[in-house]
Amino acid sequence: MLPSSIFSSAAEIGHGTAAETICGALRAAISQEVLLSGQALPQAELAQGFGVSIIPVREALKRLEAEGFVSCLPNRGAMVLGLNEDDIDEYSHIRALLEEQAAAEGARNMTRVELARVEDAYEAFVSGVKESDGAVQSGTLNRAFHNAIYEAAHRPRLFEMIDDLHVRLDRYIRAHLVLEGRKEITDHEHKAILDACRARDPDLCARLTREHILEAAATSIEVMRRRKKMG
Image (tube, rainbow, N blue to C red; front, side):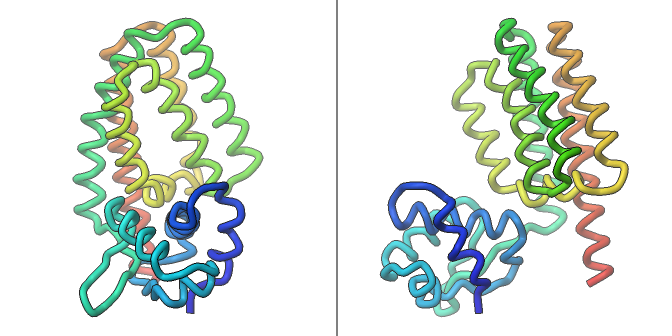
């Protein structure tokens, strides 16, 4: 049986079609690990819980499959899809390639107004995570900081590709942020990236961004290994 919270959370997703609402609710539940890897997603139960027909449920599951959240198998139905260590490592190296380019171009082209947005995002991460140590909050604020830099690159297609990888990896990216002592390390790394933006040093900003991403990926994989041992 599916957790009732995924149905009650649908009202918070916002306006849109039934399929969009269901997709948003399930995506959030998977990202927040309310629904775990291997969890079956029966269409009939989802339709009843969301109060809709099978059609929007089927459409939502197809979207989630395209995003890498769900696997739809013939005669077996849909289930939550997880990533293994090799998947996370490969995706993270792709992220590093894309994001170091966006960071370099962002630092090179950044206006004063855009720099101010990066500074605001940095301060929000530092203060916001102190107020709430939840992985969801910290992950959102972390993403906002980096996105503020990438938006200054004015490369919409590059940004779209980065955003797609974030969607796929979000639940794993966030895993390292709540570890004891990781907050201080992340603050230090973000500050160094911010200072590179202030100095208009694209090469330094790119290098620091790459190192930051790969270090976070290694830590997330380590968290996964610990969980396996404990489980």
